[in-house]
Length: 257
Image (cartoon, rainbow, N blue to C red; front, side, top):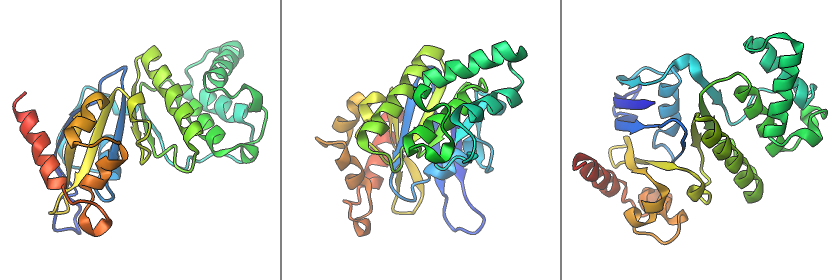
């Protein structure tokens, strides 16, 4: 999936929400998107899933092949975890007969580690378990591009890490394209690629980094991952105000490739 957004501007604004966004999301890889507040993470996702128009194009993908998992998925609180996954599979019309359908449901229950709670109603599940149900509901529909928006918000570090690890394992095993937007950067090393969005001094979001997590600390000249956002946050938001510098630094590196 290749995303090329020359610019995105909302009608009621005098500045671009995004500019010069050129990034690939390879199949079989997990990509983490992080960024400062107002850098355009949500706007980027809206462009990718077809909810917002922009100047540019997205290639090497089929929009119908995208599964979008929001931060707060719509789940029927009174049905069981298994029933939620079952109905998603049934409506997908991918499975022939009850035997194939039930096998698929059980496979995805096991894949997401929901065996012990599959017969529990959604309102009795923890936040992490609900997110696993929402992911299973999308995976069982056979989509090859998974876009998950802040799915680990409110989860403790251990639950968040386990959830990301499962998605990485599924991605590598199935060859799907998985894109996760998150504020949680302590799990950076679990991902294959990282995209950092930053809001420049002109209020426009741009790419401050895109590549392997192995080189991200060196690029931002930090020892700890948490210091990355501190460097690119605006000074009036408690940061060091270096967004323009790192956007320019990344543009310079990209132009030499």
